[in-house]
Amino acid sequence: MILWIIGFSILGSIGAVAGAALMLLFPDSIRRTLVPVLVSYATGTLLGAAFLGMIPAGLKQAPAPALMATVLAGMVLFFVLEKFVLWRHCHENQCEVHSRAGPLILIGDAFHNFVDGVVIAAAFLTSIQLGIITSLAVIAHEVPQEVGDFAILLDSGYGRARALVLNGLSSVATLPGAVVTYFWLGETRAAVPYILALSAASFIYIAAADLIPGLHRQVTAAASLRQLALLLAGIGTIALFHFGG
Image (cartoon, rainbow, N blue to C red; front, top):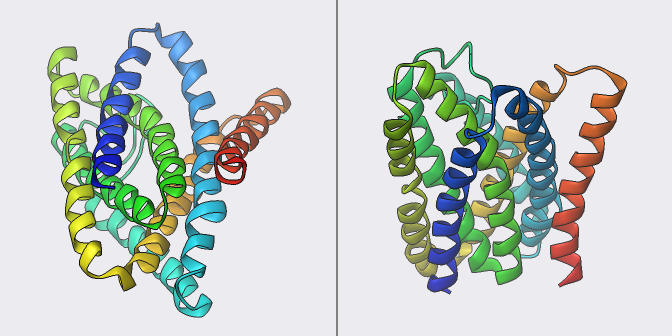
């Protein structure tokens, strides 16, 4: 199990940074088209992983009132973290919260990646299937986030090579988050459903508070239909892995 967790934690870190780095090779015009596509798909994977995977798995191990109260508490917690730590996931070159705040971006990204490691480990400790679909959702939403972080670092005066190295270092935080969680939850299995509930809350919060408002900036009929189709494709991907396995 630890090998599964380590492997997918590393895959999530490398995949997100590599995907973002490749995206930056495209001209700005193409990148502005592709990033909303990735965000739409990532929104679906986050919501699908939370509502089809994590919450149902947690409900099998803990009473529904306690588990759903944990999800709600998690939503409030992530709101507070975002307010006080400025934990944001920008997908544009300019961001009202992140504007020219390179070091803050890196600190927030490292913290977020650590939490991703916690999410991945908790999911794998429930089942390998849940671990895989959770890792897929993590990778899907990390790519557009890293694209935004790269763009902000470049706008803050960082060179491309330095921005890539620093973002790569912040992504390494996923692995210790996963390993620490594996050994901690290995001793306190009763906490697993509640960690899943907090993980679901983080996915729902990212999708609802950050990704979806960004999608609403495009209001044409064609853009809206494309976003809906990609969102449903993201949910469908999670459903396929979850129910088709």
